[in-house]
Image (cartoon, rainbow, N blue to C red; front, top):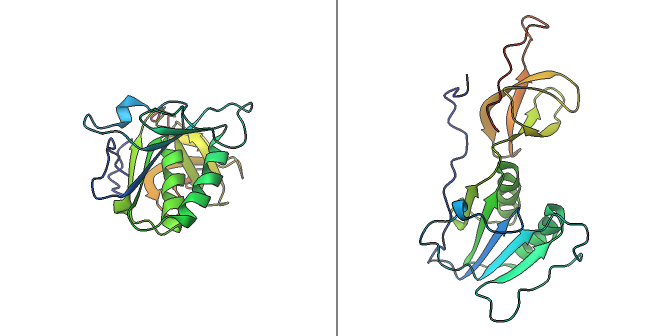
Length: 196
């Protein structure tokens, strides 16, 4: 039941510098850059934004010490990183390349921001690391539920038991969840953890 034969699921690959780009920004949802998200010949990213997940971090990023290979900005939360990314993308010009490494939810949000700012899919590179948990869109009440790991979840909006489909909506940046017991109310399939 895990592979439903639906081909909309994004495919991710480790990232490396695109030689055709003039300016490069790598964003990650962790305090350090996960090595499994990088190609062996990745090169040095001139600018990296990370997330410390620490409310004590200053509200604005701070720079790496002079002489470091990369200029690193550390944000206290993903939300603060995204606020700064929106501002950055609004003033970027042709030749900019955006790279992201992290959870699928983080990647979907980065891709949405990039697309809204006018970046093409070829100007962005995404690598999934960490948990395989999914963001689910309830087709019944239109609520997004993050962190789904099972084939059946409870919608955080309407409380409906949803079957997690393998169909991914780029527009919504989420997988589709449909009522699991529509034909026979109360009859749920065996719940399996498929996306740890």
